[in-house]
Length: 373
Image 1: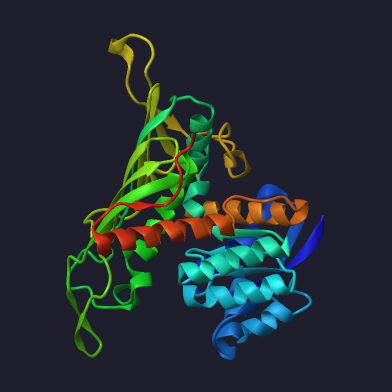
Image 2: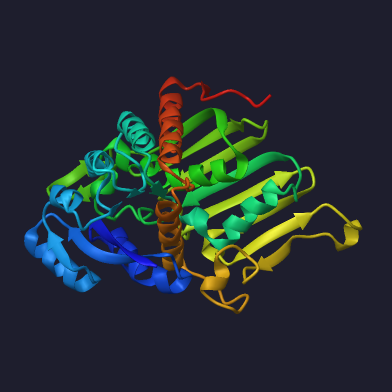
């Protein structure tokens, strides 16, 4: 067991989640590397000192450059806005330091491509924060598909829908401004990652997007909404399966609507993140009179669950996903083995989101890769 000094950039919603995970991961998983919360960076010195005290870091700074260069910082977590990811990651890789970066990987696909190449060239551990694919239930779903339990996939339906902007009286904010902050840039990457993780690569798609509330009250009066409230894509996977993905921030009643259905020639799987400790499995076997979806409650028999609780059905939560991420990041650093999802996955997701935008503009199908032979 040895300590590893961690530098965290950002102290907001995700910054706090990662700080909590860093303090917990060694005890939960008994990791070989034990994180030492060395330095946290925010935009102001006073804010950094306050964040260090609140989140349990030894020191704070208002300079991410100082954090990256600090010799006591051996690995870096980027939990700051997406427009900052590129420069921080490149500096960290140049210094030979492993990087965990929150999604999306970058503000543009061009930047994401540079970052993914820098990650490869550096040879150090790198990982992107698609946390929902880390739930024990979804890890188990991936295992079931890989083991052929539902046969050859022929259709995938998935969505990430929430309702935080469903009320038209909600004021304008950063989410309603700019292409990168629309639903395609904000929510879609998570479920596109899930589709790739469960179904393999996507080789062609056609997309559509919509603004359902064109104007919202802003600080200086009414302002136009400049990005998508909801979007969808039909797609074809490399293995031949068909797919449909839907993304929305205006779906009344949906709070964490990250959900999917997988249909194969031997059965089906259903999952909904709002019920994240249950997976529904249908096997096309036995008499028709006894067939039906079987509810599987996650427990110690499922990936990563046993480290949190010995009781099946007791469940894991959102914060546990972040702890699992940090366990995998530390393992990648310790073993020098690649970890999923890495920067190349972050790049692929952004390439596909770009393809949806292109399709929406051209009103046509877009090719994104070759079919499997």
